[in-house]
Length: 404
Image (cartoon, rainbow, N blue to C red):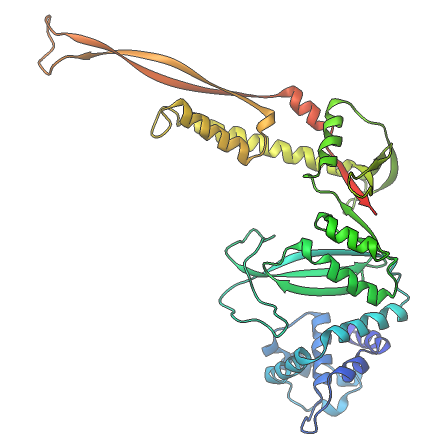
């Protein structure tokens, strides 16, 4: 048996066709309702996602008896037909449509919404796509998570339940919308879906702003997020760790995702820690896998800096690198780019080279006069700061969770 009957059975349980008919009305001149065309598109997206111009061929390959729509078996489902159906879907009240689907599925499959996770990403676009939608959505240049600042993009936000990672809410924003301005709107929508503010909202460090957290807490909500490195509380705690180790206890062991034998574990630092403003609880967590990643990343940047310094060393005393100031600036650019200033010590040395230069252009003889001239040559040497690296290793694997 193929996958189509199984998917059709789930869709029927969801009542998806009924919900779509409530939002997309039939017209008398339609030989096939737009909803039925959209249902075929949904099945295709679930099974493999073909381009619109190939959908007619795919439709002819399926057995309509599995879908209970044998009367449309001889209809030609062209890309134009699918395009018109998508136009009608676009003009419908899609926000209410999505809310209706989510509420129905949550109730039908008894999905637990006590904890909801949110994240966002950028979706880049190629070519020239002008204009904006009726809701104001348009492609814009912004912070590209694909590292393609030359391309316009959209920002896509998704919220899923911790119970099975079921999508609960999603929304697209203009490409220049920053992540730290989307959470209030998202939380309000989720509250309407869940019907209570008491669910636990989990987001990344972009959620960690006073405006957003105070709004959620003020409405009776709860949130967990990671505190950015720029906060004074983070700087202070890690500076203490560099000076001395702190007591921690293991709270969770698990098999490393994607591995059969490797284990990873999480620990929590003992003690009570609060944010300076509003007194939110801070849980300082240690991750064995994050420790490996932190050390690996630092070693990568250290080696990159050493390679660049080696290349620079071969170029000094030539071109624009004939002064101590120019060499110093080049060294600083390298270590700052790799963000390892505090882990390297470098020294620019100076030696004098003397040589004779003949006075005049005549052929050298016993009466030829010479003058002694000096040429200053610079040397560059560097070493890793062992003690600084040892202290920094104490902070590897550590991150702060803020809990309201």
